[in-house]
Length: 282
Ligand code: C2E
Ligand code: CA
Ligand code: CA
Ligand code: CA
Image (cartoon, rainbow, N blue to C red):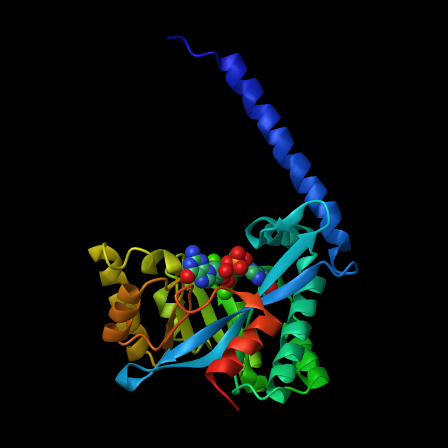
């Protein structure tokens, strides 16, 4: 059959128009989201895998949420890229840092165990020379020691300009802030840079964890990452752990920490504190 090129084309453009209209709507709405207090953070616990099969909560990852009165909940996968291209990620990212660290202080006061707060950093924030200064100011304002903060950045953010990245990482490291590589294995990192980057932890991407029990290749990759990290003196945390089978494999291979729906979805601060206190009475 002959293809109807013209219809295909018209379909394509109207779809594209709908997409860019949505992007424009989101962009305008996002400009006001901060001041209108539509942004919030959810927190997902991170657990160390200890000898004897025990798990112990050691941290929380702050994950941004946006609820708009008409658009409803908008996924970070949709609005973070818009925040990045518009530069809105700078004020939003600063708010995230401030809010997450303030929350950590409230949890300390409420008697939760001493946790590390992991905060996601966009490449756009990382490009900003003043990042170490900004992070230092927020830590000081909130009154949190730098060691309680872990910044997660992707391989892409670090490899965009490795020389500049090393300088920023050195400065953050000198201040005592921890760094981890997020989504490890999905980006284009050069392994030779791993020893130059001041990171302490690799977060093994959930795409390798998902089919761990069925897929021998994923098992080989995860195993290799864990061994390489150990040889370089880096910690490992596996993301997206959903089943006991995945957990068992990760434990056996010597993965040091885990995070995922098996333990908890990301939840609001109050729900987080409640369940942590229930399992770890002060
Ligand atoms: P990410 O940093 O890789 O975060 C992990 C994502 O996986 C989160 O999605 C989390 O809810 C989800 N997740 C956690 N455990 C499981 C699991 O067991 N199974 C599955 N299927 N998923 C799980 P979320 O919250 O939708 O965030 C998506 C992405 O948006 C994040 O990926 C991160 O790249 C970005 N993001 C979120 N908050 C921030 C932020 O404050 N700043 C920046 N720059 N980016 C953020
Ligand atoms: Ca992350
Ligand atoms: Ca990740
Ligand atoms: Ca991701």
